[in-house]
Length: 459
Length: 79
Image 1: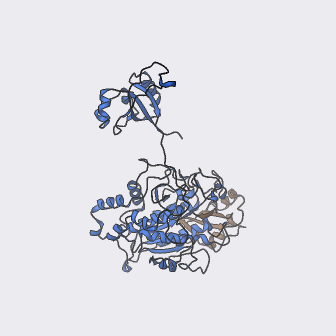
Image 2: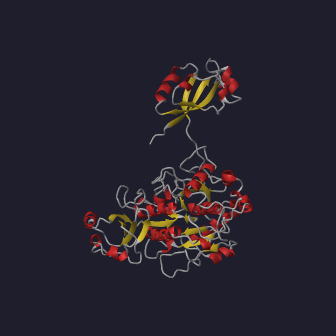
Image 3: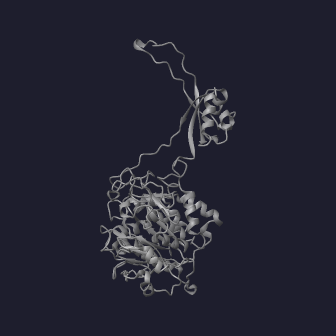
Protein backbone atom coordinates (compact mmCIF):
# COMPACT_ATOMS: atom_id res chain seq x y z
CA UNK A 1 0.00 0.00 0.00
CA UNK A 2 1.52 3.46 -1.00
CA UNK A 3 2.45 5.85 1.80
CA UNK A 4 -0.07 8.58 2.52
CA UNK A 5 2.66 11.23 2.37
CA UNK A 6 5.77 11.65 0.27
CA UNK A 7 8.83 13.27 1.79
CA UNK A 8 10.65 15.65 -0.52
CA UNK A 9 13.65 17.95 -0.56
CA UNK A 10 13.23 21.17 -2.53
CA UNK A 11 16.30 22.95 -3.86
CA UNK A 12 15.81 26.71 -3.98
CA UNK A 13 17.81 29.54 -5.49
CA UNK A 14 19.56 31.59 -2.87
CA UNK A 15 17.83 34.61 -1.44
CA UNK A 16 18.85 36.82 1.50
CA UNK A 17 15.86 35.47 3.45
CA UNK A 18 16.97 31.89 2.94
CA UNK A 19 20.53 32.74 3.90
CA UNK A 20 19.21 34.35 7.05
CA UNK A 21 17.00 31.38 7.86
CA UNK A 22 19.91 28.95 7.47
CA UNK A 23 20.95 29.94 10.97
CA UNK A 24 17.52 29.74 12.57
CA UNK A 25 14.14 28.13 12.28
CA UNK A 26 12.71 28.47 8.81
CA UNK A 27 9.61 29.96 10.35
CA UNK A 28 11.55 33.21 10.27
CA UNK A 29 11.81 33.08 6.47
CA UNK A 30 9.14 34.40 4.11
CA UNK A 31 6.56 31.81 3.00
CA UNK A 32 7.28 29.89 -0.16
CA UNK A 33 4.74 29.80 -2.99
CA UNK A 34 4.32 26.02 -2.94
CA UNK A 35 3.90 25.80 0.84
CA UNK A 36 0.42 27.35 0.54
CA UNK A 37 -0.85 24.38 -1.50
CA UNK A 38 -3.24 22.28 0.67
CA UNK A 39 -1.54 19.02 1.52
CA UNK A 40 1.97 20.48 1.50
CA UNK A 41 3.65 20.76 4.92
CA UNK A 42 6.93 22.62 4.99
CA UNK A 43 9.14 21.39 7.83
CA UNK A 44 9.65 24.60 9.79
CA UNK A 45 12.04 22.90 12.17
CA UNK A 46 14.50 22.09 9.37
CA UNK A 47 16.78 25.06 8.82
CA UNK A 48 17.60 25.56 5.12
CA UNK A 49 20.85 23.81 4.24
CA UNK A 50 23.24 25.72 1.97
CA UNK A 51 24.55 23.81 -1.02
CA UNK A 52 27.85 25.32 -2.14
CA UNK A 53 28.11 26.25 -5.82
CA UNK A 54 29.54 23.60 -8.13
CA UNK A 55 32.99 24.72 -9.29
CA UNK A 56 34.05 24.49 -12.98
CA UNK A 57 35.79 21.25 -13.89
CA UNK A 58 39.38 21.66 -15.07
CA UNK A 59 40.54 19.88 -18.20
CA UNK A 60 44.03 18.59 -19.10
CA UNK A 61 47.00 20.78 -18.24
CA UNK A 62 44.87 22.45 -15.57
CA UNK A 63 43.08 24.58 -18.15
CA UNK A 64 39.32 25.17 -18.21
CA UNK A 65 37.77 22.74 -20.66
CA UNK A 66 34.87 25.04 -21.35
CA UNK A 67 33.90 28.57 -20.54
CA UNK A 68 31.06 28.68 -18.06
CA UNK A 69 30.14 30.47 -14.91
CA UNK A 70 30.21 28.80 -11.49
CA UNK A 71 26.72 27.69 -10.59
CA UNK A 72 24.80 29.75 -8.05
CA UNK A 73 24.40 28.92 -4.38
CA UNK A 74 21.24 27.10 -3.48
CA UNK A 75 19.45 25.90 -0.35
CA UNK A 76 17.60 22.73 0.54
CA UNK A 77 14.34 22.80 2.46
CA UNK A 78 12.26 19.79 3.46
CA UNK A 79 8.53 19.12 3.14
CA UNK A 80 5.85 16.43 3.25
CA UNK A 81 3.37 16.28 0.43
CA UNK A 82 0.16 14.27 0.51
CA UNK A 83 -0.41 11.91 -2.39
CA UNK A 84 -3.47 13.93 -3.39
CA UNK A 85 -1.51 17.20 -3.50
CA UNK A 86 1.49 15.78 -5.34
CA UNK A 87 0.41 16.66 -8.91
CA UNK A 88 -0.37 20.29 -7.99
CA UNK A 89 2.84 20.53 -5.99
CA UNK A 90 5.02 19.25 -8.84
CA UNK A 91 3.25 21.45 -11.35
CA UNK A 92 3.67 24.53 -9.14
CA UNK A 93 7.34 23.93 -8.41
CA UNK A 94 8.05 23.35 -12.09
CA UNK A 95 6.72 26.83 -12.88
CA UNK A 96 8.34 28.46 -9.85
CA UNK A 97 11.52 30.33 -10.89
CA UNK A 98 12.90 30.10 -7.34
CA UNK A 99 12.88 26.28 -7.45
CA UNK A 100 15.88 24.51 -8.93
CA UNK A 101 14.56 20.99 -8.38
CA UNK A 102 12.46 18.64 -6.27
CA UNK A 103 13.99 15.43 -4.97
CA UNK A 104 12.87 12.40 -3.05
CA UNK A 105 13.80 12.29 0.66
CA UNK A 106 13.89 8.55 1.26
CA UNK A 107 14.14 7.03 4.69
CA UNK A 108 17.52 5.59 5.57
CA UNK A 109 18.19 2.88 8.03
CA UNK A 110 21.08 1.67 10.08
CA UNK A 111 22.44 -1.64 8.97
CA UNK A 112 21.16 -4.24 11.37
CA UNK A 113 23.57 -6.15 13.57
CA UNK A 114 24.06 -9.87 13.15
CA UNK A 115 26.13 -10.60 16.24
CA UNK A 116 28.40 -13.62 16.36
CA UNK A 117 28.76 -13.54 20.13
CA UNK A 118 27.25 -11.70 23.07
CA UNK A 119 27.26 -7.92 22.88
CA UNK A 120 27.48 -6.72 26.44
CA UNK A 121 26.25 -8.39 29.58
CA UNK A 122 23.13 -8.43 31.70
CA UNK A 123 24.80 -5.77 33.86
CA UNK A 124 24.78 -3.51 30.83
CA UNK A 125 21.08 -4.26 30.41
CA UNK A 126 20.54 -3.42 34.11
CA UNK A 127 22.17 -0.09 33.52
CA UNK A 128 20.12 0.59 30.38
CA UNK A 129 16.92 -0.29 32.24
CA UNK A 130 17.83 1.92 35.22
CA UNK A 131 17.36 -1.05 37.53
CA UNK A 132 19.03 0.81 40.38
CA UNK A 133 16.43 3.58 40.10
CA UNK A 134 13.60 1.07 39.79
CA UNK A 135 14.75 -0.55 43.01
CA UNK A 136 15.17 2.78 44.76
CA UNK A 137 11.50 3.42 44.02
CA UNK A 138 10.46 0.01 45.24
CA UNK A 139 9.69 -1.22 41.74
CA UNK A 140 11.15 -4.71 42.11
CA UNK A 141 8.30 -6.87 40.89
CA UNK A 142 7.64 -8.10 44.44
CA UNK A 143 4.24 -9.77 44.61
CA UNK A 144 3.84 -9.77 40.84
CA UNK A 145 3.33 -13.09 39.10
CA UNK A 146 5.15 -13.60 35.81
CA UNK A 147 4.15 -16.65 33.80
CA UNK A 148 7.02 -17.99 31.72
CA UNK A 149 5.16 -19.81 28.96
CA UNK A 150 8.10 -21.74 27.57
CA UNK A 151 10.17 -24.91 27.99
CA UNK A 152 10.12 -24.94 31.77
CA UNK A 153 12.05 -23.14 34.49
CA UNK A 154 14.80 -24.39 36.80
CA UNK A 155 14.76 -22.32 39.98
CA UNK A 156 17.82 -23.97 41.49
CA UNK A 157 19.82 -22.86 38.48
CA UNK A 158 18.52 -19.30 38.83
CA UNK A 159 19.58 -19.24 42.45
CA UNK A 160 23.04 -20.48 41.59
CA UNK A 161 23.22 -17.60 39.13
CA UNK A 162 22.22 -15.04 41.74
CA UNK A 163 18.52 -14.67 40.98
CA UNK A 164 16.06 -15.27 43.82
CA UNK A 165 12.53 -14.99 42.49
CA UNK A 166 9.60 -16.54 44.29
CA UNK A 167 7.71 -19.43 42.74
CA UNK A 168 4.02 -20.19 42.44
CA UNK A 169 3.74 -23.97 42.11
CA UNK A 170 -0.04 -23.95 42.31
CA UNK A 171 -0.53 -21.81 39.23
CA UNK A 172 2.23 -23.57 37.28
CA UNK A 173 1.24 -26.03 34.55
CA UNK A 174 2.62 -28.48 32.03
CA UNK A 175 1.00 -30.54 29.25
CA UNK A 176 2.41 -33.83 30.61
CA UNK A 177 1.43 -35.38 33.92
CA UNK A 178 4.03 -35.35 36.67
CA UNK A 179 6.38 -32.75 35.19
CA UNK A 180 8.73 -31.26 37.83
CA UNK A 181 7.58 -27.69 37.28
CA UNK A 182 10.09 -25.24 38.69
CA UNK A 183 12.73 -27.96 38.49
CA UNK A 184 12.68 -28.50 34.76
CA UNK A 185 15.80 -29.15 32.67
CA UNK A 186 17.83 -25.98 32.23
CA UNK A 187 17.12 -24.53 28.80
CA UNK A 188 15.30 -21.74 27.00
CA UNK A 189 12.62 -21.19 29.64
CA UNK A 190 15.22 -20.80 32.38
CA UNK A 191 16.97 -18.18 30.25
CA UNK A 192 13.70 -16.28 29.93
CA UNK A 193 13.07 -16.45 33.67
CA UNK A 194 16.56 -15.13 34.34
CA UNK A 195 16.01 -12.24 31.96
CA UNK A 196 12.71 -11.28 33.63
CA UNK A 197 14.64 -11.09 36.90
CA UNK A 198 17.00 -8.46 35.51
CA UNK A 199 14.40 -5.74 36.10
CA UNK A 200 12.08 -7.65 38.44
CA UNK A 201 14.34 -9.61 40.81
CA UNK A 202 11.58 -10.10 43.39
CA UNK A 203 8.83 -11.28 41.05
CA UNK A 204 7.02 -14.59 41.43
CA UNK A 205 7.73 -17.02 38.60
CA UNK A 206 4.89 -19.17 37.30
CA UNK A 207 6.21 -22.05 35.22
CA UNK A 208 4.10 -22.97 32.19
CA UNK A 209 6.14 -25.61 30.41
CA UNK A 210 4.26 -25.29 27.13
CA UNK A 211 7.06 -26.31 24.79
CA UNK A 212 7.57 -29.74 26.29
CA UNK A 213 4.99 -31.79 24.43
CA UNK A 214 6.84 -34.93 23.47
CA UNK A 215 4.33 -36.25 21.01
CA UNK A 216 3.88 -33.15 18.92
CA UNK A 217 5.91 -30.46 17.21
CA UNK A 218 9.19 -30.94 15.39
CA UNK A 219 11.84 -30.67 18.08
CA UNK A 220 12.40 -30.59 21.81
CA UNK A 221 11.56 -26.90 22.04
CA UNK A 222 8.38 -27.15 20.01
CA UNK A 223 4.74 -27.45 20.86
CA UNK A 224 1.29 -26.94 19.41
CA UNK A 225 -1.26 -24.20 19.82
CA UNK A 226 -3.82 -26.37 21.57
CA UNK A 227 -1.37 -26.76 24.45
CA UNK A 228 -1.05 -22.96 24.49
CA UNK A 229 -4.84 -22.78 24.71
CA UNK A 230 -4.72 -25.03 27.77
CA UNK A 231 -1.94 -22.98 29.33
CA UNK A 232 -3.89 -19.77 28.84
CA UNK A 233 -7.07 -21.38 30.13
CA UNK A 234 -5.31 -22.08 33.44
CA UNK A 235 -4.21 -18.46 33.65
CA UNK A 236 -7.65 -17.19 32.63
CA UNK A 237 -9.28 -19.28 35.31
CA UNK A 238 -6.92 -17.75 37.88
CA UNK A 239 -7.65 -14.20 36.78
CA UNK A 240 -11.40 -14.66 36.68
CA UNK A 241 -11.89 -16.73 39.82
CA UNK A 242 -13.63 -15.07 42.75
CA UNK A 243 -11.44 -12.95 45.00
CA UNK A 244 -10.57 -13.83 48.58
CA UNK A 245 -10.35 -10.36 50.13
CA UNK A 246 -9.69 -11.67 53.64
CA UNK A 247 -6.56 -13.28 52.22
CA UNK A 248 -5.48 -9.98 50.69
CA UNK A 249 -6.65 -11.08 47.25
CA UNK A 250 -8.43 -8.57 45.03
CA UNK A 251 -9.65 -8.39 41.46
CA UNK A 252 -8.68 -7.46 38.89
CA UNK A 253 -5.53 -9.43 39.57
CA UNK A 254 -2.21 -8.61 38.00
CA UNK A 255 -0.35 -11.12 35.87
CA UNK A 256 2.45 -10.75 33.35
CA UNK A 257 2.65 -13.45 30.67
CA UNK A 258 5.90 -13.90 28.77
CA UNK A 259 5.77 -15.70 25.41
CA UNK A 260 9.12 -16.18 23.69
CA UNK A 261 7.76 -18.41 20.94
CA UNK A 262 5.77 -18.34 17.78
CA UNK A 263 5.10 -19.78 14.35
CA UNK A 264 8.08 -19.58 12.00
CA UNK A 265 6.76 -20.36 8.54
CA UNK A 266 3.43 -20.29 6.68
CA UNK A 267 3.81 -23.98 5.89
CA UNK A 268 3.15 -24.69 9.58
CA UNK A 269 -0.34 -23.25 9.14
CA UNK A 270 -3.40 -23.43 6.92
CA UNK A 271 -3.34 -20.90 4.05
CA UNK A 272 -4.52 -17.36 4.65
CA UNK A 273 -8.20 -17.22 3.81
CA UNK A 274 -8.82 -20.79 4.91
CA UNK A 275 -11.16 -20.77 7.89
CA UNK A 276 -8.70 -22.97 9.78
CA UNK A 277 -5.85 -20.48 9.38
CA UNK A 278 -4.13 -19.10 12.49
CA UNK A 279 -1.69 -16.41 11.35
CA UNK A 280 -4.26 -13.94 10.02
CA UNK A 281 -7.43 -15.15 11.71
CA UNK A 282 -8.76 -13.35 14.79
CA UNK A 283 -11.37 -16.12 15.14
CA UNK A 284 -8.74 -18.80 15.79
CA UNK A 285 -9.23 -20.18 19.33
CA UNK A 286 -5.78 -19.18 20.50
CA UNK A 287 -6.19 -15.61 19.25
CA UNK A 288 -9.52 -15.47 21.06
CA UNK A 289 -8.16 -16.67 24.38
CA UNK A 290 -5.27 -14.21 24.18
CA UNK A 291 -7.83 -11.40 23.95
CA UNK A 292 -9.82 -12.94 26.81
CA UNK A 293 -6.77 -13.12 29.06
CA UNK A 294 -5.87 -9.50 28.34
CA UNK A 295 -9.45 -8.43 29.00
CA UNK A 296 -9.19 -10.19 32.35
CA UNK A 297 -6.20 -8.00 33.29
CA UNK A 298 -3.06 -9.74 32.04
CA UNK A 299 -0.10 -8.01 30.46
CA UNK A 300 0.83 -10.33 27.60
CA UNK A 301 4.17 -9.97 25.85
CA UNK A 302 5.13 -11.85 22.69
CA UNK A 303 8.40 -12.04 20.81
CA UNK A 304 8.29 -10.46 17.35
CA UNK A 305 10.07 -13.49 15.94
CA UNK A 306 13.48 -14.33 14.52
CA UNK A 307 12.80 -14.09 10.80
CA UNK A 308 14.42 -10.71 10.16
CA UNK A 309 15.89 -10.50 6.64
CA UNK A 310 19.51 -9.83 7.54
CA UNK A 311 20.20 -13.01 9.53
CA UNK A 312 17.07 -15.10 9.93
CA UNK A 313 16.69 -18.30 11.93
CA UNK A 314 16.90 -21.40 9.74
CA UNK A 315 13.35 -22.35 10.72
CA UNK A 316 12.12 -19.33 8.75
CA UNK A 317 13.07 -21.24 5.58
CA UNK A 318 13.51 -18.03 3.61
CA UNK A 319 10.21 -16.42 4.66
CA UNK A 320 11.71 -13.18 5.90
CA UNK A 321 9.21 -10.60 4.67
CA UNK A 322 6.01 -12.24 5.82
CA UNK A 323 5.49 -10.04 8.85
CA UNK A 324 4.55 -11.13 12.35
CA UNK A 325 2.15 -14.04 12.63
CA UNK A 326 -0.89 -14.68 14.76
CA UNK A 327 -1.05 -13.82 18.45
CA UNK A 328 2.46 -12.35 18.34
CA UNK A 329 0.78 -9.48 16.44
CA UNK A 330 -2.45 -9.31 18.42
CA UNK A 331 -3.73 -5.86 19.40
CA UNK A 332 -4.04 -7.28 22.91
CA UNK A 333 -0.33 -7.94 23.38
CA UNK A 334 2.98 -6.10 23.54
CA UNK A 335 5.02 -7.34 20.60
CA UNK A 336 8.74 -7.02 21.28
CA UNK A 337 11.52 -6.61 18.71
CA UNK A 338 15.20 -7.05 19.52
CA UNK A 339 18.05 -4.55 19.76
CA UNK A 340 21.55 -4.96 21.14
CA UNK A 341 22.93 -2.76 23.90
CA UNK A 342 23.85 -0.05 21.38
CA UNK A 343 20.16 0.07 20.39
CA UNK A 344 20.87 -1.22 16.92
CA UNK A 345 18.32 -3.73 15.71
CA UNK A 346 19.47 -7.33 15.58
CA UNK A 347 19.19 -8.56 12.01
CA UNK A 348 17.08 -11.57 12.95
CA UNK A 349 14.36 -9.52 14.63
CA UNK A 350 11.26 -9.97 12.50
CA UNK A 351 10.08 -6.83 10.74
CA UNK A 352 6.40 -5.97 10.77
CA UNK A 353 3.67 -5.45 9.87
CA UNK A 354 1.64 -7.67 12.12
CA UNK A 355 -0.81 -10.02 10.47
CA UNK A 356 -3.59 -9.33 12.99
CA UNK A 357 -2.74 -5.77 14.01
CA UNK A 358 -0.59 -4.04 11.40
CA UNK A 359 1.34 -1.62 13.63
CA UNK A 360 3.62 -4.18 15.18
CA UNK A 361 6.08 -4.64 16.78
CA UNK A 362 5.19 -2.29 19.63
CA UNK A 363 8.60 -1.71 21.16
CA UNK A 364 12.14 -3.01 20.99
CA UNK A 365 14.04 -4.39 23.96
CA UNK A 366 17.53 -5.64 24.67
CA UNK A 367 18.90 -8.97 23.58
CA UNK A 368 22.06 -10.86 22.66
CA UNK A 369 23.96 -10.27 25.87
CA UNK A 370 25.90 -12.58 28.17
CA UNK A 371 23.49 -13.18 30.99
CA UNK A 372 21.89 -16.37 32.20
CA UNK A 373 24.73 -18.63 31.11
CA UNK A 374 22.23 -21.08 29.65
CA UNK A 375 23.65 -20.14 26.25
CA UNK A 376 26.71 -18.11 25.28
CA UNK A 377 24.31 -15.23 24.66
CA UNK A 378 20.77 -14.65 25.87
CA UNK A 379 19.56 -14.04 22.35
CA UNK A 380 16.71 -13.89 19.92
CA UNK A 381 13.61 -11.86 20.39
CA UNK A 382 13.23 -14.61 23.00
CA UNK A 383 15.50 -12.71 25.37
CA UNK A 384 14.27 -9.24 24.39
CA UNK A 385 10.76 -10.20 25.46
CA UNK A 386 11.44 -11.25 29.08
CA UNK A 387 13.71 -8.23 29.50
CA UNK A 388 10.63 -6.12 28.70
CA UNK A 389 8.39 -8.41 30.78
CA UNK A 390 10.65 -7.71 33.73
CA UNK A 391 10.16 -3.97 33.32
CA UNK A 392 6.40 -4.49 33.19
CA UNK A 393 6.51 -6.68 36.29
CA UNK A 394 8.66 -4.10 38.09
CA UNK A 395 6.17 -1.34 37.28
CA UNK A 396 3.23 -3.50 38.31
CA UNK A 397 4.61 -3.66 41.85
CA UNK A 398 3.11 -0.23 42.48
CA UNK A 399 0.86 0.14 39.45
CA UNK A 400 -1.31 -2.99 39.32
CA UNK A 401 -3.85 -3.53 36.56
CA UNK A 402 -6.56 -2.09 38.80
CA UNK A 403 -4.73 1.25 38.56
CA UNK A 404 -3.32 1.02 35.04
CA UNK A 405 -5.05 -1.35 32.66
CA UNK A 406 -3.01 -3.51 30.27
CA UNK A 407 -4.12 -1.29 27.39
CA UNK A 408 -3.01 1.85 29.25
CA UNK A 409 0.37 0.32 30.06
CA UNK A 410 0.84 -0.67 26.42
CA UNK A 411 0.12 2.94 25.43
CA UNK A 412 2.63 4.21 28.00
CA UNK A 413 5.34 1.87 26.77
CA UNK A 414 4.75 3.04 23.20
CA UNK A 415 4.52 6.73 24.04
CA UNK A 416 7.69 6.72 26.13
CA UNK A 417 9.78 4.51 23.86
CA UNK A 418 12.98 5.94 22.48
CA UNK A 419 11.86 6.41 18.89
CA UNK A 420 14.13 5.50 16.02
CA UNK A 421 13.84 7.80 13.00
CA UNK A 422 11.35 9.94 14.83
CA UNK A 423 8.29 7.79 14.26
CA UNK A 424 6.81 4.32 14.33
CA UNK A 425 8.42 1.87 11.94
CA UNK A 426 8.18 -1.84 11.37
CA UNK A 427 11.72 -2.57 12.58
CA UNK A 428 11.64 -0.96 16.04
CA UNK A 429 7.95 -0.33 16.50
CA UNK A 430 7.49 2.83 18.54
CA UNK A 431 11.07 2.60 19.68
CA UNK A 432 13.41 1.13 22.26
CA UNK A 433 12.00 0.64 25.75
CA UNK A 434 12.81 3.75 27.79
CA UNK A 435 12.56 3.31 31.53
CA UNK A 436 13.52 6.90 32.31
CA UNK A 437 10.68 8.32 30.24
CA UNK A 438 8.31 5.66 31.54
CA UNK A 439 9.05 6.62 35.14
CA UNK A 440 8.53 10.30 34.35
CA UNK A 441 5.11 9.55 32.91
CA UNK A 442 4.19 7.40 35.88
CA UNK A 443 5.24 10.24 38.20
CA UNK A 444 2.79 12.48 36.37
CA UNK A 445 -0.11 10.17 37.15
CA UNK A 446 -0.36 11.49 40.67
CA UNK A 447 2.96 12.24 42.21
CA UNK A 448 6.04 10.10 42.85
CA UNK A 449 4.96 6.48 43.33
CA UNK A 450 7.30 5.96 46.27
CA UNK A 451 5.10 8.32 48.26
CA UNK A 452 1.93 6.43 47.44
CA UNK A 453 1.93 2.72 47.87
CA UNK A 454 -0.85 1.63 45.59
CA UNK A 455 0.04 -1.98 45.19
CA UNK A 456 -1.90 -4.50 47.18
CA UNK A 457 0.36 -7.49 46.99
CA UNK A 458 1.45 -9.84 49.65
CA UNK A 459 5.25 -9.98 49.72
CA UNK B 1 -2.25 -31.75 12.22
CA UNK B 2 -4.85 -32.07 14.95
CA UNK B 3 -7.95 -29.91 14.90
CA UNK B 4 -9.48 -27.60 17.46
CA UNK B 5 -13.26 -27.47 17.31
CA UNK B 6 -14.81 -24.26 18.56
CA UNK B 7 -18.20 -24.40 20.23
CA UNK B 8 -20.62 -21.91 21.68
CA UNK B 9 -22.37 -23.51 24.62
CA UNK B 10 -25.45 -22.31 26.48
CA UNK B 11 -23.89 -22.57 29.93
CA UNK B 12 -20.90 -23.73 31.91
CA UNK B 13 -23.01 -26.68 33.03
CA UNK B 14 -22.59 -28.06 29.52
CA UNK B 15 -19.61 -30.29 30.34
CA UNK B 16 -17.24 -32.40 28.27
CA UNK B 17 -19.48 -35.45 28.36
CA UNK B 18 -22.40 -33.41 27.06
CA UNK B 19 -20.19 -32.14 24.23
CA UNK B 20 -19.10 -35.67 23.39
CA UNK B 21 -22.79 -36.54 23.03
CA UNK B 22 -23.54 -33.80 20.53
CA UNK B 23 -24.96 -35.33 17.35
CA UNK B 24 -22.73 -33.09 15.25
CA UNK B 25 -19.63 -34.62 16.81
CA UNK B 26 -20.71 -38.21 16.35
CA UNK B 27 -17.95 -40.50 15.20
CA UNK B 28 -15.20 -38.10 16.26
CA UNK B 29 -12.73 -39.11 18.92
CA UNK B 30 -12.24 -36.14 21.19
CA UNK B 31 -9.06 -35.82 23.24
CA UNK B 32 -10.18 -36.50 26.79
CA UNK B 33 -6.94 -35.25 28.28
CA UNK B 34 -7.46 -31.92 26.56
CA UNK B 35 -11.08 -31.82 27.65
CA UNK B 36 -13.41 -28.87 27.18
CA UNK B 37 -11.55 -25.57 27.41
CA UNK B 38 -13.16 -22.16 27.91
CA UNK B 39 -11.63 -19.53 25.63
CA UNK B 40 -14.10 -16.63 25.89
CA UNK B 41 -16.23 -16.34 29.05
CA UNK B 42 -18.29 -13.44 27.69
CA UNK B 43 -19.39 -15.28 24.56
CA UNK B 44 -19.39 -18.80 26.09
CA UNK B 45 -16.87 -20.04 23.55
CA UNK B 46 -15.09 -23.34 24.16
CA UNK B 47 -12.77 -25.68 22.29
CA UNK B 48 -12.24 -29.42 22.16
CA UNK B 49 -9.47 -31.19 20.28
CA UNK B 50 -9.56 -34.09 17.86
CA UNK B 51 -6.80 -35.92 16.01
CA UNK B 52 -9.24 -37.10 13.36
CA UNK B 53 -10.41 -35.32 10.22
CA UNK B 54 -13.72 -33.60 10.87
CA UNK B 55 -15.12 -34.20 7.39
CA UNK B 56 -18.26 -32.30 6.35
CA UNK B 57 -18.34 -29.40 8.79
CA UNK B 58 -21.56 -27.96 7.40
CA UNK B 59 -23.37 -31.24 7.94
CA UNK B 60 -22.08 -31.44 11.49
CA UNK B 61 -23.14 -27.86 12.17
CA UNK B 62 -26.64 -28.57 10.89
CA UNK B 63 -26.89 -31.34 13.43
CA UNK B 64 -25.39 -29.27 16.25
CA UNK B 65 -25.47 -25.48 15.84
CA UNK B 66 -23.21 -25.28 18.92
CA UNK B 67 -20.33 -26.10 16.58
CA UNK B 68 -18.88 -22.81 15.34
CA UNK B 69 -15.84 -23.90 13.37
CA UNK B 70 -12.65 -25.91 13.12
CA UNK B 71 -9.09 -24.61 13.34
CA UNK B 72 -5.59 -25.86 12.81
CA UNK B 73 -3.51 -26.99 15.78
CA UNK B 74 -0.45 -25.20 14.48
CA UNK B 75 3.11 -26.05 15.43
CA UNK B 76 4.95 -23.42 17.50
CA UNK B 77 8.59 -23.08 18.51
CA UNK B 78 10.78 -21.06 20.84
CA UNK B 79 12.26 -17.85 19.48
